[in-house]
Image 1: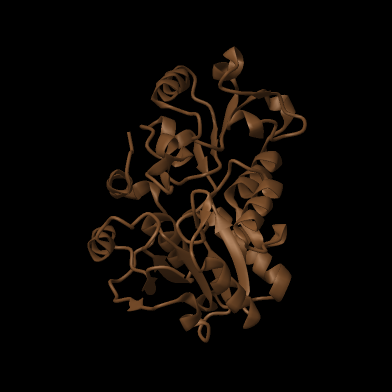
Image 2: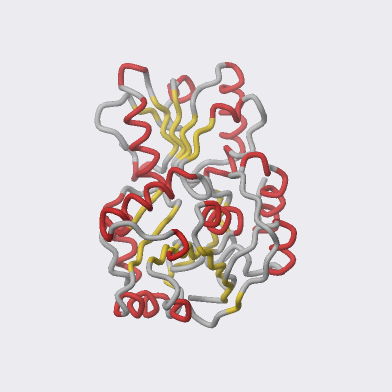
Length: 304
């Protein structure tokens, strides 16, 4: 079981073949005091949520002000998040509650990217779907036969949508794996993160239950969030829609996790900014982690 950032980091190191292929030559990074310091080089800022804008249910001190400063400079600002429990309406409300003024077209989340692909590639006639999400967020499609973990029929679903680790546990995981071993089925992962930082401790995200599946079950897994390409292709589509074509080197991915935000952003040719004070690396040796992962950000700062 993954119970800490240290555990998650070791897990990432153990599954390099399940990460995007990106070989980056070792290079030094520039330490900056705040995100506005790179405003002359960067036109588009992509912010991760957890560990960058907020920790759990609390906005990080000064984050709202820094985002507003970038906007006042005429910079383009988006949230790029693997949060998949809530739909887009819920995400917009969440960030507004934190004090951020993000509209739905300024938030790119892995749930929406996954659902677009799922609906394009499947149909209700293909059978039932098992949806792993807390009860308040049930009913994620309009026409599909949805089943939930509390339903006896859940284990016989023809496909699975894994949106949230909230409420999932080792007992359910073991039963699910057994059911999949008896009959492998497609698994659509809305959040590929292993963990997310909370005010105290971490939450277990869908990636911790799916990226770690043994072969051949892992071959049935479909991931759409960071660090994988589909969510970043959606980012580029949104930028082109709003502002036209922008050089990748003028885009910055700002995140707290080397194996998701930094790896995924670098693989797209974006500049990358590692935030260390409140998220994944807050209790870890940053330089040692960078060297072990062989994932090198362009910039590093404690908080945006």
